[in-house]
Length: 338
Image 1 (tube, rainbow, N blue to C red):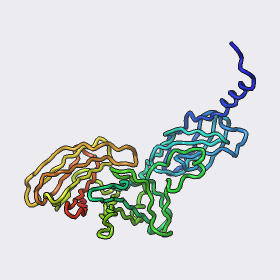
Image 2 (cartoon, helix red, strand yellow):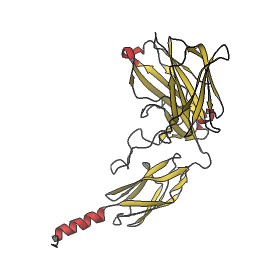
Image 3 (cartoon, rainbow, N blue to C red):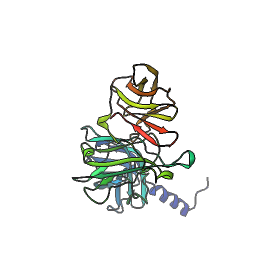
Image 4 (spheres, rainbow, N blue to C red):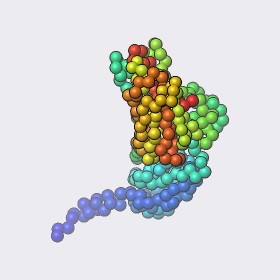
């Protein structure tokens, strides 16, 4: 077999040495408060510059980093939400990422989930309508509040040192500036935010959907913002719903648990007559930032009605609301449990 030229052999060897990989992380989980010392195992870490190594957890830098050798790095985790995150290493000019490399565990219930039931990109409707979703959120008092709303985009050699504007973690400054409003809108079934336990009561927030083609006639429809504590595992009722041909009703059901099924009854408001009933299986959440979800419409006309929703299995946590659209005015009204 012919031998490769010396320069080509050296080039291939140098390229192989320059490749950096992460094979495992121990331990692979730790508390949301951070402070876990982890050992990152891999190969190709640059030992020629001990100060040129950095580690990121979901795009957030480790609180400290130490290069041990070409195969080992030690790092201390920063605080983060209770999710599984990518871990990235920059070592000199070399870069590597281990997808889903570390899991943050909320063993002490340090975080609370907040549901934004509607969180859509701009939508086009009939008669030239253009629906936009607006969220404003403000910390009214106290220390900074971290709000985790979606994972950071994949970390790269270029973006790790300086995450793009608007990426996580998002910090709400106490009494600093105007209310903050900037999210990535990605459609139904809404979005789950993570905030420290008890922080929701220090937030002022507004979520609304507005038809911008009619903005001079209506400021839009307010959508409830729902803390985890308002989800129910027994029974929900939505009352005083107009159910005639003049209105279109859309029922949206959310769950914090996978494999959730509910029984839905539509009852005449002024009696106990059941107009219709059905079992509904919610679609499981895409990830930890989305709820389980189901949507129903085209209800049997009943004049005025109420809707009862009940989990079919114990312990499944649900919340729901119904949007009522007037066909003549296209005005939307929200009916929520409270």
